Length: 328
Image 1 (cartoon, rainbow, N blue to C red):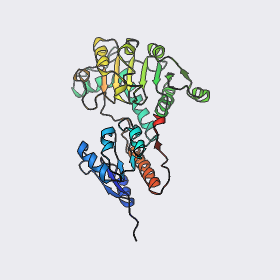
Image 2 (cartoon, rainbow, N blue to C red):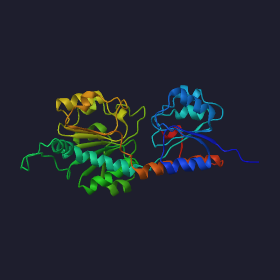
Image 3 (cartoon, rainbow, N blue to C red):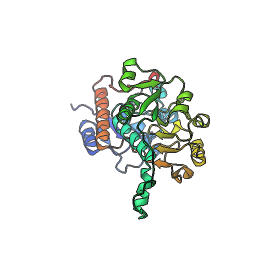
Image 4 (tube, rainbow, N blue to C red):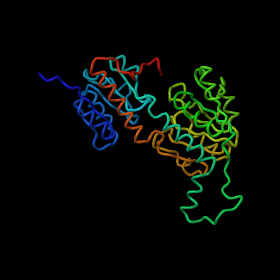
């Protein structure tokens, strides 16, 4: 008698090799349109499937989990962040949650440094000048930016991505400072030549560039609020490739417009695709459409982690990337 295969619903399009392998191993339902599934469609999927493979565009909250059927036993998230999933409620209902950590740390750190350079060296302004055909030739005082060597970089969140940013920053000759929920081991600090600040307020007030690399949790929501943003130096810049909710976007917009912060590079936004139009209009801001982890290699590696988690679960073992509420 044939062994019953797990039914798996994937909420968005994944790289073709990943979808093909899922189809070989499981009874898989793919989202051919690649449009975010409605709440009703997600509820239907969670009633019919053994495994749901969502992404950060799917809000798996308490109410949705309450509608899940008895079949659902695993939410194998495609992505490292799980702030869109009510992990505690899922576990209470006997549903495991996994993620894909550590895969895109280098990709995200690369984008962080790209944004740092884009702002400090005025790359988008230069690009716009060339595309408009307005360049009149070189002159000593034209398009002056700033040198990043010797600048103080403050990293908010010194996990995998934060440490990858620190490695790159040191290669550019920057001073690395960091604030973290827990201080790193002295050996890791020495490796990155990093200075720990127990007080986020004090670090923010002293650095030239602030990089947001912490997850979105209840304790980090608006961690960079209006009061803390006002502590930054007027010539400082802020870069966020983590989660938009960490920054009070309205407060940041007001300060950028007033010249109280020199610039910002944002790959994520507080309200998803609903970006403040006043923010989009500012010349001292570089905005990207959540591209930090968008490499072909990274997307395939994320999918491979999903495959390992689901296959390990199907074989009756603990998935390697199991998320438990105590980790959050």
